[in-house]
Image (cartoon, rainbow, N blue to C red):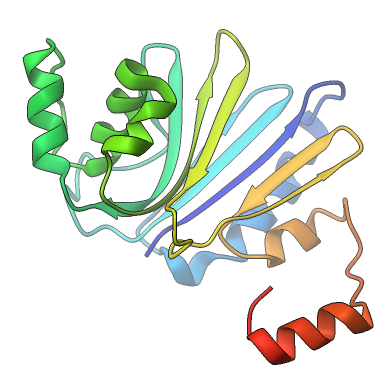
Length: 187
């Protein structure tokens, strides 16, 4: 189990939010105590908490390839199959992590990588040149991914607490939402 977090604001600098962002990521420490990593730019903050299971020495995140950076939580069941396809296309691999397979798979196939991947995952890939993000999770939502868009802020995380800690939104529970939570045990 790992955790991912991100805060994007296209118009306003987030440089003064880095300490808050670190606190946001620390709220998910129980999901990964082996490594904490950040990618900070003026308008983009990305973070990852890692529980190291595969490739203990080389699998820390954020992970970079060319102009792309990924924060990823998950498990790809057909990693070897996708890695072999990418190798046949000329890709080289530095790790045995499925994170690197997801990253390079996205570079090659863009959003169609989701049609190839079998597994459970939530991830964000950020293109540092075009300033675009791609955020996805598995079809059944097994790996959690919460997000909010308010004003110029877009925030995502593996749990709800970091989003609330940002203070971009205030928690508000309506009677209708309370009924749904109690009836469906989900939000």
